[in-house]
Image (cartoon, protein in one colour):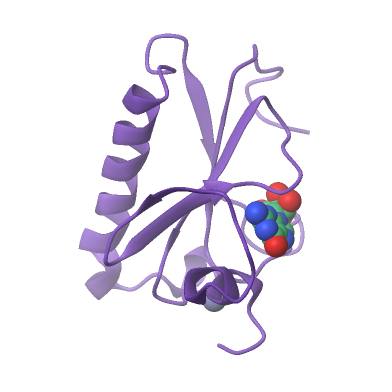
Length: 115
Ligand code: 5GP
Ligand code: ZN
């Protein structure tokens, strides 16, 4: 996916502040943080949106939650708490068409459902 900004981050063509990487998954700091801790966790496989997640991606998506779990403990926000958001499509405001899990922490979050 040559025009995908997150595929470029995966390939190292665009710099990012990585906090985790393995064969299938990468996590890095959001360039415009909406909270003191704002990490994006993404699969290296280019999946455009939640609607493109298929049966064969089930294990991968489960592993993303395991990475989030590990990061929460490593960053010491497992006790204080954090929020995970996946935007899908226009009305949710999805800007980057490569599925990503926002991990937000470090402050008391507002309403239960954003905006
Ligand atoms: P969305 O609105 O699609 O759910 O979220 C996309 C997120 O990606 C935004 O929070 C935005 O700040 C972040 N983002 C967009 N381009 C870049 C980039 O080049 N580097 C990093 N680290 N984050 C980006
Ligand atoms: Zn991509």
